[in-house]
Amino acid sequence: MGYATNSAILPVLIRKGGLIISDSLNHNSIVNGARGSGATIRVFQHNSKELIQYLPAHLYATSISPPAAQQIISAIKVILGQDGSSRARIRENSNFFRTELQKMGFEVLGDNDSPVMPIMLYNPTKIPAFSRECLKQNVAVVTVAFLATPLLLARARIGISAAHTREDLLKALEVISRVGDMVGIKYFPADSYKQHLEDNPNRLKLD
Image 1 (cartoon, helix red, strand yellow):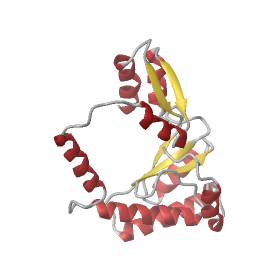
Image 2: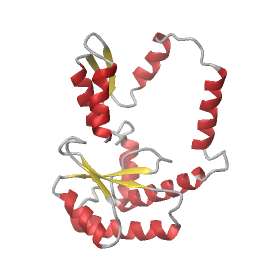
Image 3: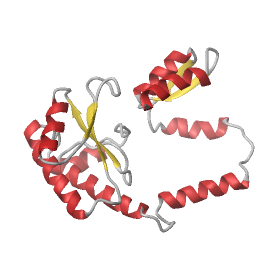
Image 4: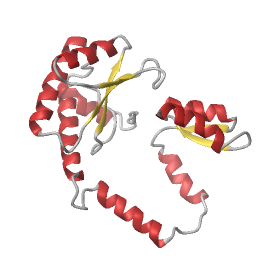
């Protein structure tokens, strides 16, 4: 499992005397693995502009090989949907679904184009209520809670694929909206969410 992999492998890769530079939003499995390694840990704020500006001036390395560079280029083309695959459809579906959730007043973390969308639940008691009510209406959602997240940062994780039709997405949105009203997880008035994002550009974004 992912949790065991991260928490167990880090102490093997690095030990006392090493240095781990850790994102403040790293998954708990990474945090616990880093702690278990005995290495010194320095945490940086997610999307820290200062760190991004600092690292290029203080890291030294030889240039990558041509095959490695081509692999990177090819991977980027796949991500951007420029390889003739279904990636473009995934991006289109994901951005549509995310935008509609935000319009409804849900707090959705993550980045545009990402098919993984955490919907914040916060209160642990809302986890089973949201999951079960969605399932009753034939929409299965994954919920994530402590220990995988901090105790009061529970969330539902929505996964979008290229196979989802617009009809599928609209049905899911209808159910999620209805259940969201029922359990009280629409934390923003629909019209104010965009303004919230503009006022908080460094809002925690990753799952």
